[in-house]
Length: 550
Image 1 (tube, rainbow, N blue to C red):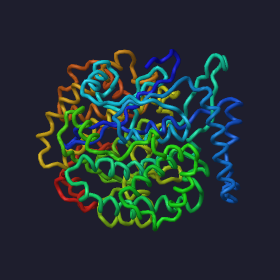
Image 2 (image 1 turned 30 degrees about the horizontal axis):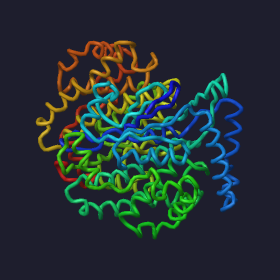
Image 3 (image 1 turned 180 degrees about the vertical axis):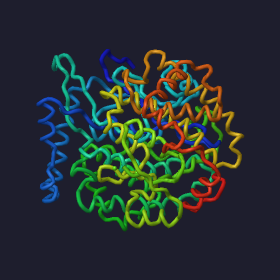
Image 4 (image 1 turned 90 degrees about the horizontal axis):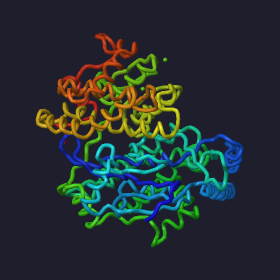
């Protein structure tokens, strides 16, 4: 395939597999690219007119009905056609010939009426070629080439708030900024809905790679009916869309999810009439209607060939185990345990932003059940952060909100996508350490963690810091804060681990001298100590879990 200079080329690092923090194997990477391609920056008059074409006011939404919904679909299509005229070229997805997390990308591109090609990974050699070319930042797929970058999309929930599209020279001599495409105001709500949907879809995606998929179906059905679908049923009782009264990436992901659920549980939407009606409306959108027809680029349910290919490309053994979900518990109020976990990154970021916060510690099952009964936990999970009158859940969504609010998330789209990639790599590494106290033999896993840190992660940051004092854009960002947290965690386990990474070590020293960080590292601050037996016991009791985790 020949790609012209100036074409938009997208290698989607759609989700591969890797061994997780406690020896099991799980999918790595993420599809939050589905969100990254879903919003375009407003700026000029052309963009303002686009926005006005598709915007439905709250009053219109209330008067609603089929006519308004149909009008919105038509206006959306008109706007998409204008978007496509200024896009530079065709998108190219690099993944397996199957669903996985790439399927969400296919869905969103389809709804946006953006044509794309696919190059399928089918051999170990193809994957090794991507590695040798330096195309995979953390030696993982998915990977996306876009706007001159080789982007490894983040997990979730790290939605980019805008995207700049450059028109061809024939169309204009200046950038054309096009307003909201699939990303409406209130991005934090979209983030939370998307994270919840992805949690549910991941339960289904992993099934073909497990020894006994049928044994897990009952648990998935129960969670869908009791935890996830009630949230969407309530949201859709007030509007034809999940957020802002108009189509967003959250709607697209929810449709994908409901169809996946019905493949496993045909009658699962019987008790959720609003979700069922929503599904029917979404299916009538012309682009989606075509995507659901035989012969489209929508993939079928995974079969033995797909599973075998994935296992061979990544040198994995069947069956895989799914990484257990670690549920954790937001002047700002943070609801969590009196320990590190994933809340620690939130504490770090608030500290650097010099935002005061209080904490309410979970110590009993009753406290957790009270949060549930109060409706404070969107997906019956913690962490939860109270901030700006909202109760935010999903760790990455929370971190993104704080980073955006306090100018720690870059200056433009390219900065943000780089920040997201670095943060995802850092979080992968920290999760390996976080899970250790909950395993039967933590020491047995240390060697693997040290090897990955030295061979996969730290070299990336060493190279980046050879060119600047900060990871992205020459200024402080949430990626810098998370990397500092990570290096300190690594040194607690491997004191000499930075000896071969002088740039990272120097970076750590500079970061420690920032006054807010210097205070946070002193005894008596709100920084938590390494987890002990008391913390582990509390977590297990609050969530009715048995030690050790599988």
